[in-house]
Image (cartoon, rainbow, N blue to C red; front, side):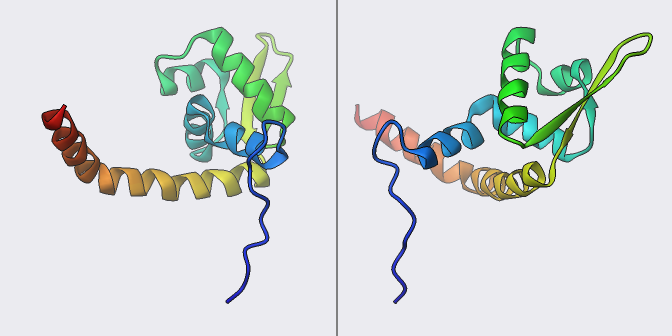
Length: 122
């Protein structure tokens, strides 16, 4: 049997934990999902996600750009237009996340049943 050589994300400064936190963050997953469908301008992305503030979306987009998951292209206009596009790394992560989202949709009834059982006991 092959031994798993992946480092265990135990410490707060673990690089793997940092990457996972970024990749699996609430807004990051939604942003990557929407951009996996094609490039979007800022306001279109904000509308697609829904309940995110401009400040929070901007911060999350900067984090994803910094990590290499997306590019930010500015068309000086007029009017100025900013378009976000996934990089190959971003597409790879988005595809992995789609599997997780598919699992969540499939298993949602089981989770809801477990919650109801737990709530009935407490």
